[in-house]
Image 1 (cartoon, one colour):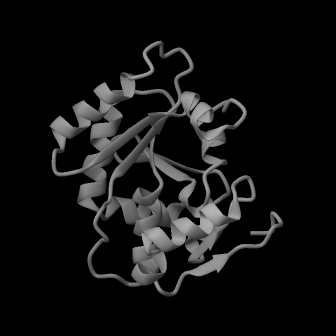
Image 2 (tube, rainbow, N blue to C red):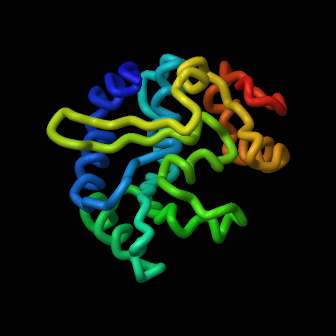
Length: 184
């Protein structure tokens, strides 16, 4: 995890994103998915410049939020602060309905249902130069350059995402792990 924190601290754009998200003061709120994953994969591939963001995934967990569209206000606030980025904010307390899962109990629990294990990682700013990084499956496979299927999700969805997102084209040294066990 320290390696990830060191990479984040060297990236001014990511630091600015984390600052803006911190200002929302949302419960269990992290910037996740490609925000962290792509940074690590870029580092493993010795890319001199960061891969551009498709979007910035902001996830939080608020069971008491009464407005199911509150996330739109948060997206608007972030878009106003940093209009050059595409923002996607989602309350993970509601996402189980869309995904057909049991209710999630936390942001980390919700992340444990994401199709790739290496995508299920997030970071948040706690205070000046202080961050928290979480991963539903740990950091080892991400740091090893793997793309691992999460057995909670359909294998075809996993393989389709690899193809559609062209990860192996952008990061050709990645190793795809599709075992059916939890050994990944």
